[in-house]
Length: 128
Image 1: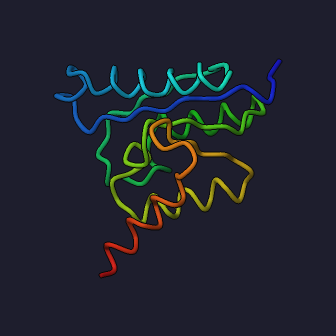
Image 2: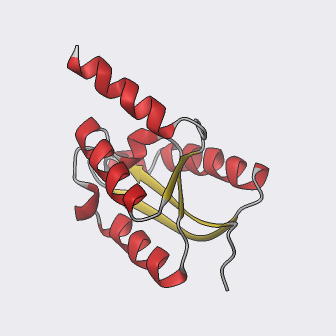
């Protein structure tokens, strides 16, 4: 049974070298701090070892998270920050828009109230 306080968490490292470092530990620590502070329950953890430039819809664990979220009825997805969604700003924006239009809430544990705001600022800086 899911509640409106259930979430799924996603982490991404860009290479096998990073997988042996502390990147995932740092990401998970940030995410779990937000989860605990906001009274959420983690119902699934997903971790891709993929380039940040790769389209999110081509990542195995990301797509598994989306499939599980639909099956479980969970629409809150937590990342440590926007770069875990993607390093490519266009991929960030298109993924954010697609998932938001489907009723998902994407939350950055490091910037919980400003996921979209920071994303748009990044786009502005790239355009100039």
